[in-house]
Length: 349
Image (cartoon, rainbow, N blue to C red; front, side):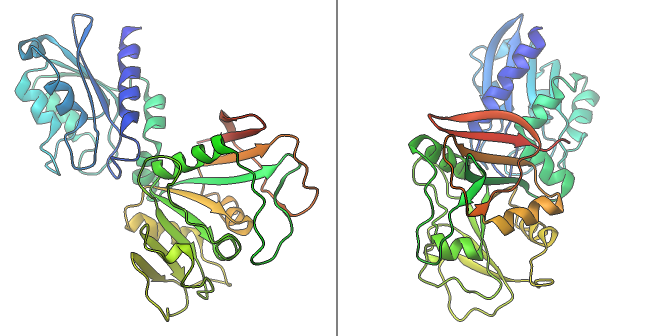
């Protein structure tokens, strides 16, 4: 079906914006005239022109627009934000038909763009490949519909189910990843808004949680540290990326690019809903939870997670150590190389 081919091309284009457009959605647009694509575009960067604007600008003969159909992965906007309304531009150019995959859940749009087009005499079709469209913008939809970030739980483990060997402070963690899965891990960081670790992982590993093996933006770093046990000379306080520290303690030091969030820890633990609400208020649409074990389990037990990305080293038997969480959800992708495979699971909606 040609309609589906054009919409899937919209999805391909949209995903070129990953890591650069948040908190906006990823959007692609394709303009078709008499069965031929005459224009394409996608939202390239937050604050920049939207997909529809770029697609329309790419058309070499603008007179054809009045006889064309524009396919858009998300409802055209109807409000003035960083850019003028795309629905208004479509009306001005006289495009007679618009095909949309998903309606926009953002309150300032939420059906208004479609109504603006219909009231202007444009034929609008919606719901084409709606589930595929939701997956493209699952971070954006989860953020606006559930009022929390999209949560990815991530860990590496041996084939027999251990995340680490027994060790104490200063003793290096077992290194599971190879070069390929390390790049995959860092690409994930570049794609998502924030990354989180708990106190024990920070103390044991002194992680940077930055993007080093690929090109991309550093995520906001989140540290849960009730008593501020992590020393001020650790990498998390180096100012390389925005950092939020959730704590009950009063900091005795300051650090560049760092905010201390004073939060009550009920029963000695930070409530996952409280944490996610704070991240929602800061407009962080997605979160990678890297550990440790107790932190991962707190998200699993709360039911507040969306995907699990689990690297498994085939043939590796640690026999003892920190047990990995149980993998659950629907397996939707496998990536990696050699004995190192990352299995990605999605919680059923």
